[in-house]
Length: 516
Ligand code: MN
Image (cartoon, rainbow, N blue to C red; front, top):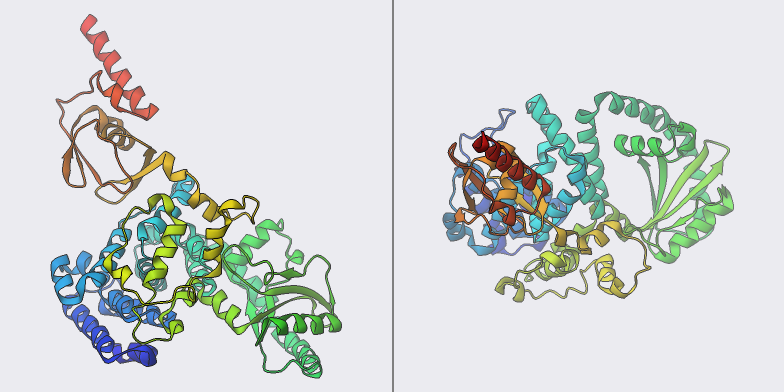
């Protein structure tokens, strides 16, 4: 059994004694409540909880989030009541665990056109970005152990990861996680292409490493000669899924891809980045049009780095990426590197609670109706230090219509949600309907028979009238009776043409029968 002390060790210097005790308590509670409960692999369930918590600790999350990582399945799978959890661990941890449980109910049914709306809904539903982080680390471990899942379910989960989770992770600039999630999914979604890509990567990537090492020593010599010190170099090998996407964009012409293997030069300061770029260009001729300054012009997700493709005698075209340590950390951990507990540097602060408000106020304004809780008010964090610059940019770009197109955020800010509502079946399937839709629209959206025999509707567990208007996130339960049928009045209550058509058909048919 893994040892929780390993997680404490990861967080050591930033934990008080009380916080240490909290993490230990959460681990023991999880172990006890999930006793005898097994994963598909036959492993104790606790391993999944431990791995989720460990990944959160590695991301730099604080004790409450790590504790919630241990507890994230206990309401859903171990029959712990919210009341009991709150009594043991308090309101904040209950809030996080309930948030994760709620997200778990969103299921992707493979309707491509819904992918983008689901992504937004997913981000919106997570409310607190810590909830999203727990859900992502939960998914990461599930993906790492996907081989133990039933084949049909496996493909559904892999598709969902590829089409919903990975783009969100990319939007948050979490490069390392994105790559792992993509390749773990790709393997199950399209095994043949995955193997093909792996073969190309092996041939064009790993096999070139020796040649590139020679090239690197030339670069090293020149950097030193020119006074660039205190830097390090690494290689980056492209992920299989990312290569596949790029090949699609380049009409499957492998000769047009030059970054299967790239060199990274990591230097202390921004000035050093440009200095190093100058040195590299002095040594090798850059390809015109291939010099990209993502420092002066960061990508919409906050990614910063200098990219250049140079022409070398040794290996032909080579991509070189130059960045500072900070940019490197950001490109790997993305948003987590900004709000992570450790970067705040104070043992007393309660994580990045205030930055959450920034996060959803800017990202999800149309859904941000929740009043700040006392919890958020007590945060003592100077959030100007931890708010990612791209989030600040969002706040400023309101008047700047011509600013860099940022489709994801534009989309979130747009009135998309003003035209659609997303509601759930009791099983968690998402149904999207026009705004002001009624339970009748919902019933017909599921099946015409259900609509035609609708007898009662419950919204969030309470009986609702047929003319009530559904709201985002409502859970709608439909009851039917064979004797129930649509009436003329229903036509006044519906918004969808689908429902209208079925009701009209039904009434017409009935009319015809009466005439006979
Ligand atoms: Mn889980």
